[in-house]
Image (cartoon, one colour):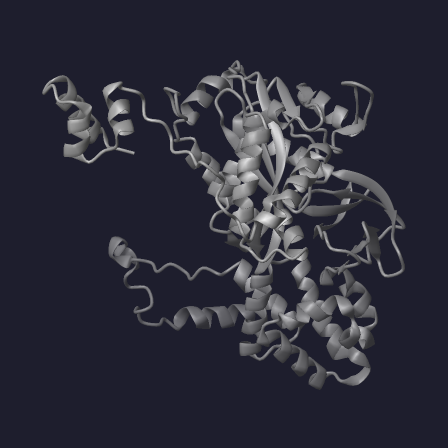
Length: 506
């Protein structure tokens, strides 16, 4: 293929210098066919192979690869053969070539056999539409690398997004993601589009019919938005949030976040969403944040109180003052326990109630068959049974994290009152101060009591009183402004008044 400069030189020689094609070919070293194309000003054609390139390694397996690719037309969209899977199949059948050669054939085959996807440009009215979807991402939380579920709500007009991470896609997480998104947007969209989620759809009927989950209907009626469910395998109906999930994962979760808790991770995601407000989408005159400011007044107003996003059930306490929820057991104070209680499971914590009285609150566990103890719940029982102190499971983990001052006080009390577990009982009474005071304050009082030489309950209470109600030193009286008082304490003693007092007493 000749360059545009060579093409120009040929045309100038032929049309301006009146040279023959044979002379031009001899002088410039091009073939007669090339001279003819340049003189006739034919457009340059792309390079085409006269015959396919030889593929000695992949060639024998090409028919097998085409067979697998043809099967994709009859497989579910999310369970089709990928280039990597085809490579694994061919490799198991004796293929020794590279995976990149299989990927190249995969791309060429799809170009030749599949029509390009076509989309309609859409425009949404401010405040009217939003889209919701879930995604997955990797995060390191408290040193553990794990898969987290990413909830994304996307406003269709302003393109503002809200992203939040959860341990699971349970219904209470689904609802809580909505309430946090509504707070973030400052209102409720009039209509929200979804996939056919089990947290919202109870069963799909024939055609476009849906039977919605009753709890979802209750949630929707509380915020008064309309719901729209896409057709199965029709992700383009909510393509904005589909793209937003990928955008959030690539831009908000790279590099992989390394945080102490879900609370820290969600704070990181919220900051990323707020920073994204400053971005201007291509072909938009305003930034995302500016378009949202225009959209916010057109959203539905928020109700005075947020929806209580929890799963509620009743439960029965066992003999260990434990309540079972989803195979995990949670402790309740032994001195406040009732046989039947109510369990309210939120996305990140769990509450146990006696009617409307809160008995206990625990971080929610998503593992299986775990026991979650709050040591303070068992201190009243241990005070009555001090002999079980060294073997009580609820205290094992807490005891491992005690500061040295706690162990010193326990040893001292055991040495002082060894009989009948009295020393242990006294120490348990000290531990029960955690029920009323912050742990840092109790630790400070224990250390102060040890330094004063009074390592017992009364000594710790005295130190707590000093720490919580410190006595202010008396202010000094400045006598320069009161000259009539300057002689007080320096005047001579008059014993005459004392003698009068003695005589009157006789």
